[in-house]
Amino acid sequence: MNSMISTLAVVATFILGSDAGVCQDTPYPACVSLGCSSTRQGSGCQQPAACTTSNNPYIFYQGVRTGVRVNRAPVADAVAELCDADTECSAMYTVELSRDFTTGEGCNDIGMLPPHGADQTHCAAEEADIEPEGRMWTGVPLNNYKGHPFPTDGIKQSLAAAQGSVTALTESGLDCALSNSASQNQNCAFPLGYKSDTILKHLGICVSVVNAQDKWVEIMASSTEGSSGGSFCVRDRKPSANQDGETGCTVSGDLIDIRESGNRPAAATNANAQDKMSVIFYAQDNTDDAAIGIHWRITASYIRPTNREPSNAAGDEKDAEDWSMTRDGAGYPMSLMAPYPANYNGTPVFETSTGSSASWSAPVLQLVFALVAMTVMLW
Image 1 (cartoon, rainbow, N blue to C red):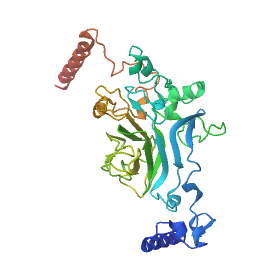
Image 2: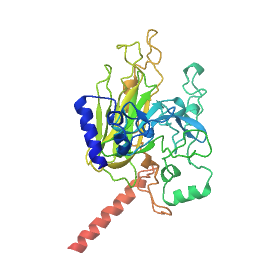
Image 3: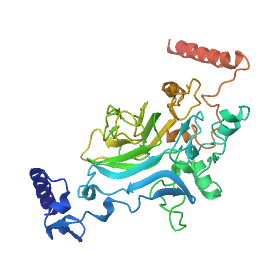
Image 4: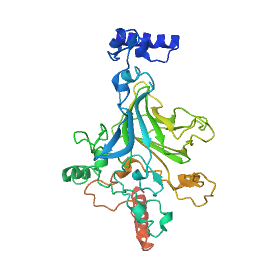
């Protein structure tokens, strides 16, 4: 019955051309039976309270504010359809990129969350010999996030190690704290600075990105372990006059899209332009039953300009287009997994010695002899 009422309300909204939302366009009290708020608005109802998050709070980690704000906490598809706006979004975030959350990868990016499993501190150490005016990380609160979350919890660390994993992968990255209150989950897991979410049927994860003005961005995502799988994409939600509207997809598993942010200052080519890029992660196929658990991360270029001219605007990075060549295309959360099971005593396949040619020629000769012996036996 409810689905029938919902369908009729949506059809009526389409025919009448109203953009107020299903709840406002459905007469009271029928709108309440749909799942709308019981609070009246006009002749209808207000949208469900879950459609927005009061004051758009930041996610916190161990009492410290991160660079991710929650505009809409994850909701069910039935709730999203009743919202006054952004009905295609089951969750909405604003990412405020910052040097504080650099991934530590190449020390040339700004990120959104603490990169659990990575060490940022080497970025400052590596520029110790550079003249002070040329340093990029002076005064930035960089940390060693290896072992996070719960770096001092011996039991959690042991359980993760027994699986050849790390707590960044074994601990939950959901229901994160939205304040510095100790009553909330202050230890959400952010493997390499990724956020955890679930793509639901016909809906997506909507993200707005700021502080990416005149920069290149890297959008990465991967399916979480135990996810229902399926391919997914990321595309621009609301291309402006400064954006071309790009789409990046993956057949299954991992996604990477590196491109210009399209973000421009308000005084640039378009008076309505702004430093905000808006994208959505969504299922590419199996949209009717999609429930794809993903890790997603957005970073932007932060490089030392070598050819800046006095007339350039502040923050302009003329050689940022080469930034993509310095990125690690394998920097997904699962790269934190140990490549071998616990108590493995064999010789690691990927370890080689460069001491002498004998370090590799001996195993090759042994393989040749083994093949010859097998051939003789077959004869």
